[in-house]
Image 1: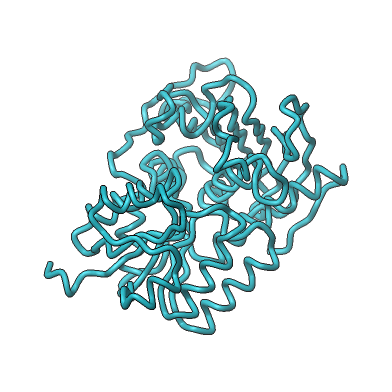
Image 2: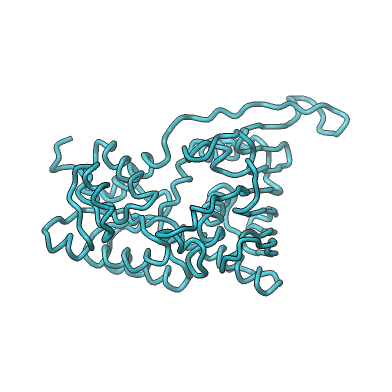
Length: 354
């Protein structure tokens, strides 16, 4: 496609995830990486690597007549709303990394801005494009386990000390860091994508050993609008291979284990996500504990989630597709994370309107 017909995209922020988004933009035939925005001196190395100009702010980018059609916001959580709003108010479509915000009220404000200016707001829950999630959703849609009844989820691993050191020490600070906002929000979005909205949350905080302001983990009990119930264990300070990254191999920094991280139990069988096992009785076999269950492999394709997310974003900007994860979808995950934090602090269940 001719360069002038491609969607021009800016990358806002060059932390861990910004360069990964830049790679996906460059690999998309319908997009062009226009520039990078980041005030930090080290961002120049990233801009040089991708051979694009660097601007220290969105304002300087616009003043420099470098005007993208769209931008991807990859900055610390507490900056998402302000930067997203600045882009939208200047007529630039925005893909904002998760979480959409660090509180529910400001997330709603950002969605309202997108509606008012008529520009797309997409949230970077890229795991909706992950082939393991796609395979699980297809298996559920095919009624492979019958009607879902319950789910058990795990996101447990041990983060390194360097993960919390400057310039990313915000990860250890209340209000923007902690595994609820950084990691659980991904898991909630996947559970919503697979099983529908959560309507009630119970939560108990785990023991904390680092001395950070934020939680290290939490045990949760969920009820979904469909009637499905579930448990979930979250911790970023326990050695374990039972987490999305280890199970799927999505993050090259984390060794792949192929272990399960979700088990979805239905009226006719169990789907284990991560090791991708479908356990159920054979055709014509009476469903009772005296009979042996069969275990089948669920096939997983090879698409790259970040690349698929950029393709969807480009098509959303062009008006060809709906976003796989809209601003409203992202806010729903934030609302559940907020409910988890409130339930954890109060010791009481929290109900959520849907």
